[in-house]
Length: 295
Image 1: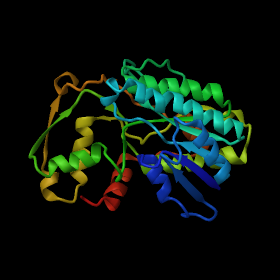
Image 2: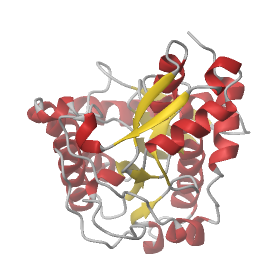
Image 3: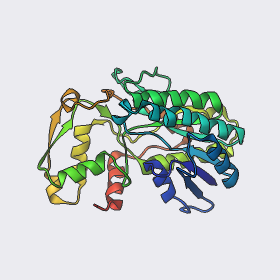
């Protein structure tokens, strides 16, 4: 199975790249700008023609949630129009497509976890651009699989876990938002989920049960403050384990972009369809620390 993964510097793309050759017959080709730029359809088509993938994973995204409030055009160019370009090129080449999306397409007003058919109503530019990307993918590629996930972390790049460990190394107390709830999800687990999806899409072309929107996240819903406490509990450095967490409100934090108070995703549809149960938060964080190298 050869995967073409778009978005070379993203957390999920790097996690997928780390799986290259991890099992017989698995080849993961990861491409990003300038060689493959989702805002330039010709580069997408050329990459598909050159690499002959069995399946395409679009992990490219503009993910700077607060910065997107000012860089609206840039966010939509990648997350909306870019997603549409990828879907159109994949469909033209007759290749199955997995497109990664986000819990931030929801407004957070629901009291329970969100299922795939719940109405979307994004609160910020990032969420709105990703929701428009979903629309364009569905319009351009009838067989595409859209995988929504949430609160992604990994040993790669910039994310909440790495930020917490860096700040805790020099602060005894950290003020963390305690009124937003979601499901922190390991990029490694998302990568494994993508492989499971790709295998089925390749083996069962045209199966309508594999198309449309699915939710995938790790199994534990908690606030950012609770997540920080879990991170510190598992840290190897005793000083970090003793870091105090002071809960603050979203309003007090004062981020430019609004966030949903609840963005917990229900994963039953994914589990029933693909037979893969998401890992526990404990398991995924332990894997993170087994791979993490402080900078």
